[in-house]
Image 1 (tube, rainbow, N blue to C red):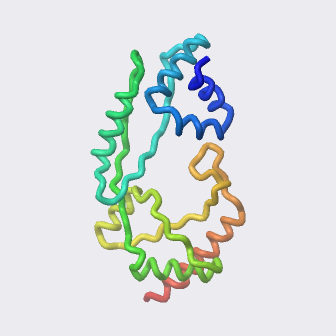
Image 2: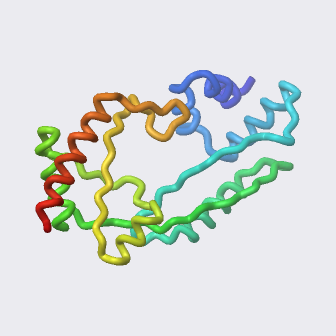
Image 3: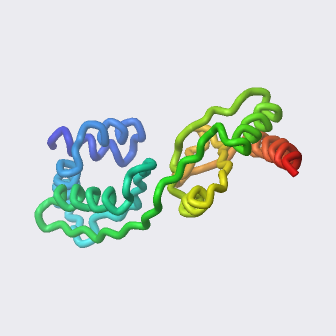
Length: 182
């Protein structure tokens, strides 16, 4: 058996191997490997795979252009005889200036509730409602309290009770501080 096929077998059962596989094997080689493995095991290629893929776009990037480029890459990587049904839900990216007063208030409230300044991360940003807020000049406060062991947005996602409590304390402090704006 070829080394890529061995990596694919390990990929099914071993999370660390899956990281190696995706780093080491380009999409076209992955498709060929899957087809060879299916042939070896007598599995029909009629239903090869289904996946949901998320691509994060940054301000200034056009979601339709990115989607078209992704579809072109995926189609170009298909092994002979394979088909691709491609559909996309597109949303434009948003970005809010962290120096805006409501966002400064949010950072202060979270620091007061949690004992330290929150880390400002650019993450996602393509929630459709956020673009509508951004276009109208309405700053949005988006926060999260999931930690790496929570496996956020994965099939075995969880949320620690301690994180839930941190979120509750931060939300209370935020609402108290935002109420002072009146």
